[in-house]
Image 1: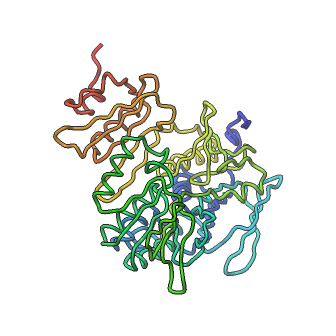
Image 2: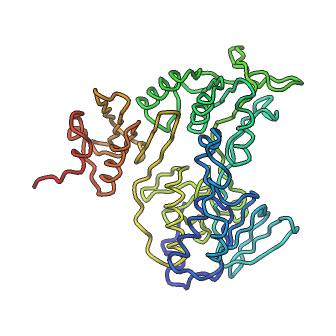
Image 3: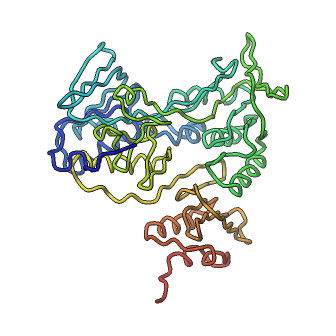
Length: 428
């Protein structure tokens, strides 16, 4: 993929109007950033969902517990958008986008029918949809996914309906499983791989989380391939596995990942490969279209490609897109980070472990629940997974921000806190 070397508008005045397709965390933060940087032009957020923009992380936890409401998960108060002169179109589906010589024409449908409008610049924040495998019975109403607020409402209504089978041992599935167990539901997690969380975390962390979920009385079945969701006239009855075994269920949650929404990007002819491919400026292959958030695949300066689905990534990509739109230098991007709460297990990750050559596991003998897995590439620290260790996570994030990347020999003494090993000034 070849990207233009220019800064796409760095020498041109800011656009007079900007259309953002989507109203996710990335989209709202982009609007925030533009206004805070002094942008006075038109900002229009176009959302297919009927709701005001909201946070997604609570949907698999606090929402299911009944500890969150539609108001409490809002990203901004309702009056904020008018106060900041941000036009928010909810319940509006973008049907087509087309580049013109001087901008883009966006065609959309809503409660008032079909409309078209021209904008100077376009930002795609279209997010991703929950993946639905081609599994017999998967279209039954009692087979759910969790990606948006309406999904969360449906799932909350089913938590007490009977046994739940979660297909997929990824972050969403495990968060839901832990929450449902805390509410007293009978839960089985079925994972086709030989361990939880696939390539998302390392073996030590995956094993610890497996032990923790089983200690919560969640039945976790590994190396099992579902072949059918069995149902009759009364509803879902169970999930049948390749070995013929049938797991009883009243509700099935499909937690097998997400598919980036790339349809509009494909209309524009930009490169899509498991997402809209963007560079560090969040520019697509035409060096004009911007894309941010869960719909993107990021090309690093070294040429590698990766997807990040996290609030941190949404914020940092929005910051980069705002700089491009305003013709300002790109802000320095900090090391990526991520979190997942699974029952009483708090996982916090900083860095990317891909390409690591060694792992160092730190376990405090006095507090064995606190575990840190450190990943090194050629004796340089590149990532860490912290379980129930928020102080260690903070020390690691701070060290990464300072460019401190020690080797395993410096960090192997578990009797010395990581904060001291990482943040104490090194004597000359």
